[in-house]
Length: 110
Image (cartoon, rainbow, N blue to C red; front, side):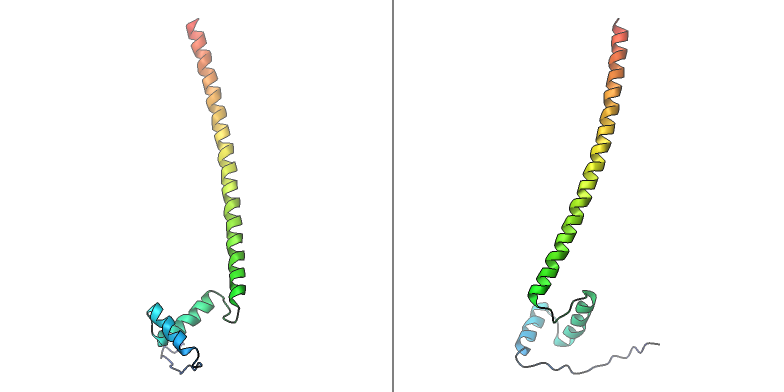
């Protein structure tokens, strides 16, 4: 059974990052106490490694975007092909109906 009692601990960070953390928390409108669990959830949920360089993250993001873009383009092409085939089939049926109507008109006008 999981203990629901909150556990509070002190987190130490260097004084160089203190102003940055305060600025970030102010921008996000959260307290520093709220920041830690949110940051942990963010990194766990996103499967991110905070040690990665910004360039690595950008490259990973570009890869994900490119993959998603290619999948979307493939989906659109498949839909276009399916729709084109369906339109061609319907067009053939309409042309056949038009030919039959024209034959009836010709027979009736004789």
